[in-house]
Image (cartoon, rainbow, N blue to C red; front, side, top):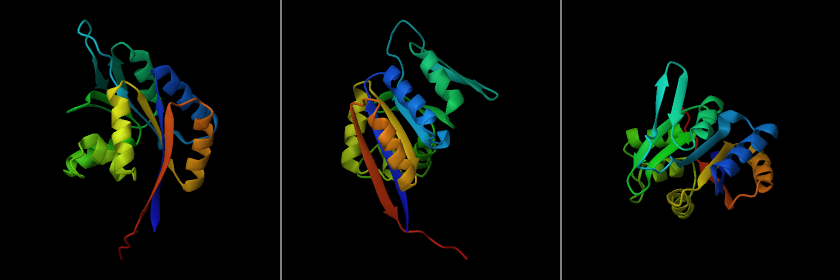
Length: 179
């Protein structure tokens, strides 16, 4: 048996989420295991989007410097238009889970791409609803994945960063051996 372990924290502002990521990094959490998800900036007056040239990604919008910092720090980034949620920006390994759900046409109990990606990470359906609601209200998710010990360490750090809410999730998955 192997398990998927994560701690998901909800933050009210991009500044709070940024502080949490910096504290996790300072605490020795591997950046390969961190993800962040949030909405882009809402406005009818300014363009919002991102582009990628070579190894550099650039986001523009109301909080461009916030997202720009994560493109360089975390591994993997994406911009999704998700029905019911609108434009979502994501950085870190969560991107691969969302893309895998979309490419594999994973539909889990009527969930969309984001919900299916989170479910694939081992996050239960009732928590996914809570996290999608947080995103709809312009809050940010910071996710740390890893072993049970790594997630426990990340949880201890997150608890000191004043999140709106956080939860630890573990999903045992049967390992498949190939010969």
